[in-house]
Length: 497
Image (cartoon, rainbow, N blue to C red; front, side, top):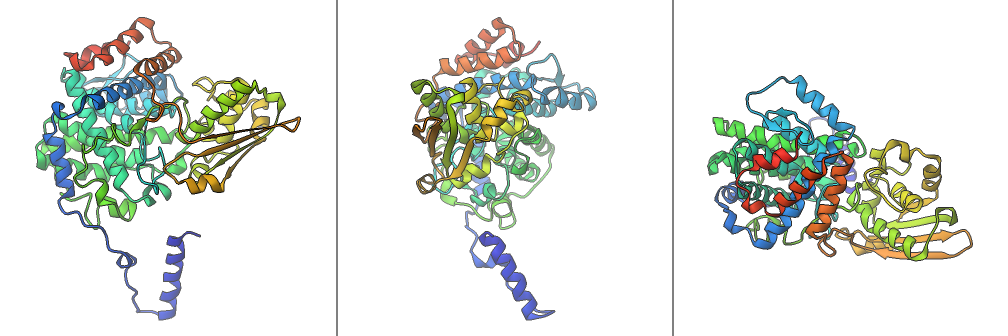
């Protein structure tokens, strides 16, 4: 029983003891809600006032890598099981005179629904970038997936408006910055007790990018944030199902709706973030003002603590262990038939987020440390082709899964939630034990991917989608010099049939 449940039960027992007609103090009176007057309006002012020249060159370069990564994942996701389903849904809504591209296809739709479809595709394989935590009480790498909620609506609006690459990059960076600072500020309870931040905080990022591109003023942008707060949603119990990518696609869609309504004159609360009955209180039970007040762009999240690009299409918390497992396999030439058992120690947050301990589908395998370790031992690789239902269900895979012990290790727990401490012990049948230890994965700021390495990942995603090599190379080249692109619609042509 956690402290909140204990408090609720104690409160109920006290009420019974008092008898009918007796009142108790409100639970919220136990702790004072942080005060940050004018916070929502200051976020809106940041969105409206920020110029391309305000973004440091190194942040712009980091953003290009995440943008290329996101576009590649949209291609790969268009070929996932979810791609045809979301497109079928969008088609059922009828045609629109205003149309934006659905990446990986020749289909076009209203920006709202193009954003939904592209957002679902980017997150379909759980292969997209992740925001890193700065505070020790925040789960490392699980604050939000920043690109998936922001890139689709920004891309759609820039395509329709024939906007420049700089316009896309400005809206993208403003959206990511707003999303990430809100995710960093909200109480850890938000994620710990079930909310999926990509669906909730990601909605603010989408709204910020759309408000920027729509040219909304400060008051309209404030209302956009108020509308967006009401739209966001998503619960971690859906991890390992098609609905997790829906959280991301819906967040991408939400910003277009919020900005469209605000542009028409729709109103909302002008203090939705900091109000006692607003987002931070209702969704998190509190927030840290120091993580957001006066912090937007100071520093930019891409600069510190950074954004991680994934080396494998699975939950980011599995990646340090996966990198270490691959290293141990290669250095010791470990063969699956030689393995008696594998122990993987981690902190409690990792064991509850990687929650499928006996996976039977590819989606569940993405959130299963047991599968991630098993497939590396059996195949020495874990890419898009490995996280498929048929692979997870193979007899040899299921047998190996049963030999992996994923547990809470005191050393990993003590290291803090801002690390992904992974302690490996591979027990071989002859009695030999091979040990390893890792905290960070390839693609993290401490071990970043170069633009060329992200381009290689993009090529793999494009190949998975059976995309023409000429178009693949063209996208890589355009994004690398995105700041000089005169018209985003030309980039869209390389991403559609």
